[in-house]
Length: 196
Length: 191
Image (cartoon, rainbow over all chains, first blue to last red; front, side, top):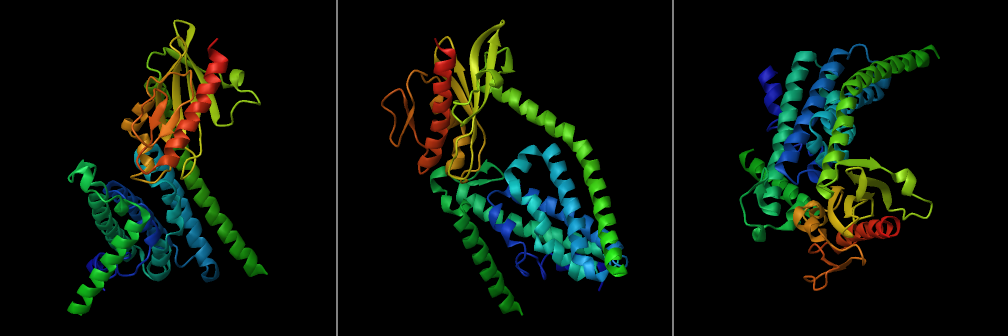
């Protein structure tokens, strides 16, 4: 497979959120504003990129029987670093993402990519895989965020675009997350079944 | 047996390297985080009690075993060397967890100057509005002589605070914290 392919597969064909339906916990919890989605996507991509590079570079050294604990140690170290860096440099974003930054450790997309891709490929394809998957996840988050923020709060990136009386609070509450994600998955399945 | 030791040593080394990386990032981030916390605290002191020239943490002096447990900190604001205001940090329990609220009182005028919600984990769009200025403004300049109460309708008495629509629990929580501070203020600072 070409490198371009490794990159683009994460965006559409194997989009982690819409096609693989992984990482739904942060996707439901933090998608109340577009800013959160961008921040989460960036933090996630940084961790995925770093962990994919290290794991693919060490794939011949890591003993097979302890690979999962080894992955967790590597991922947790990077997440803690990102967590500290965000606390220091982007305090507002850090506050609004809260517990979901440390929870990137157990994000199944990152562990999934480590096990399914970085473990079997060299560093360069793993970088492209991480960038593609990270971008795909970020785009998916931002899409969910856009629907929820516009319909639920009447704003986009904090700019008011709908009068407050027209905003449906339900959309930024937890049920709105389920409804939005469900509708999107259904819509994408419909589109795919027609084109396939 | 040898295998187990090998695997253990491998993980140990890996975790060691990981911790080293984390501690390196921490050494860079820690001073920045502490500085932000301090800056945030000073600016919120200014917001709830703008007149104070110097603010000292006097919790040790005023916090006793019978002090309301909602009160976490008692800071005294001085103007030209004399205590003029008191700034409380209270932590009442809201709908989604503890709310950290700062409340400022003026000693001479016996009133609440302002409150500020420092952090909260209330429902976005509902209780989270507690941190919005429209709600915090409802507490401004209230007399500290009587306890505040929450109403669902526009207030008719001076000691009434209109609740945030559909967030009575949050509104009551904020008010309970402010009331705890108010009681302490009246017994400790107003003669």
